[in-house]
Image (cartoon, rainbow, N blue to C red):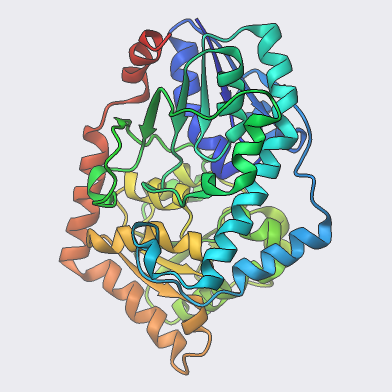
Length: 397
């Protein structure tokens, strides 16, 4: 069987596909992972055969900058907003439509190349990231099953409602259809109650890239270890400014009896300045290799980061700065395994360092939060492994 995996060129969308792609390959199937040119190095480091198609989004640098400013310039949105879209105001709805058009543009830029490759390689099934509409169009064009692979958030905003989504299909002389199946790595207790569509549960197996565990992390700690990270996406779009909330965290934790483990890119660390005495960096170390040696995490609210920490059983503090990053932390808070603070509120808090210290101290000492994090880890562990879904993919042909 030939399985074509595809995602837009971003780690948060490529990385969740890797465990299932490797499970298919380990079962003896031919696998390809396709994305835009900017993802070439990322895919090669996964060890999977790479296919590069199309180009990046056809959007000017200024348009991209304006969109980033609009997203990061938002006040906090209503809690669990994807399940209550009626609570959004006109400006928030307009921003969602703008994001939807951007995502369609990203897929449009790689669709023709993906179709061309698929017509030559002839996959039996296409597994695509939830917002990679190029995978949907290609499967429809070839008449093969398409399996949507969610990347962590249990309910996606309705980006497919923008007119440009249907136009993506019309240009290729085909029409949209429902996916053959939907793979859901979010543990059931973190999902929105309103999610009614049938899904294939799959255990979230953390993959955050290749790397080495720093040797110093494997030594028994003398005090609790708190990981501080702000992901890949924010540094890519905001540069050094992405680290501002987490520099504040690190400075606030300097007076607590904890060790701080800072995980981010080497480039970001170079701009970050000197660290306090009990803070140490693990530059570019994959998060899933670091967290088993930590007791709590402070993070930016990304789906991958949240689920990686949940799989490790860690209590979490999320400090979010944009609407899509608020979703996973709100679900984490709903199950009692974490605390959610908004950067928009924290930066004007005259006692911001006290607020952070109190939150982290709670993560480390509060039995209900610690127990909830352990239950979430156990729940993830009970979900079917990626290898268990290979037979279902085989039957979808």
